[in-house]
Image (tube, rainbow, N blue to C red; front, side, top):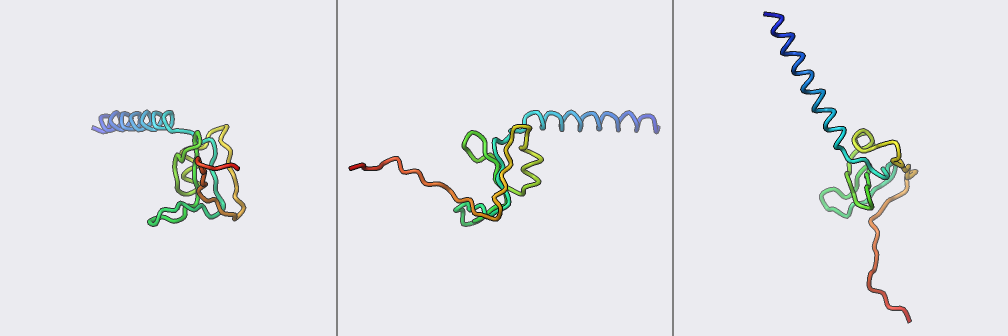
Length: 99
């Protein structure tokens, strides 16, 4: 009876390991992760976040520094310490008049 349990346990462990490996292989790695300051979102339900991960100039994820570093930091990811400064959304005006 206990032999069947061990076989079942090893199958569950193998399944979970393959699932975790598949998830890690498909997780997107960020170009940059900014943390250590006020990150303003301009979203009324969540006006600031602790960390932001960016990939190809687009927001990949927001959350805690640890969670983003665990999920999205790779060998070439640049982690930026904002040193308690603020990061705010940019405004690019595509319609300017030059005189």
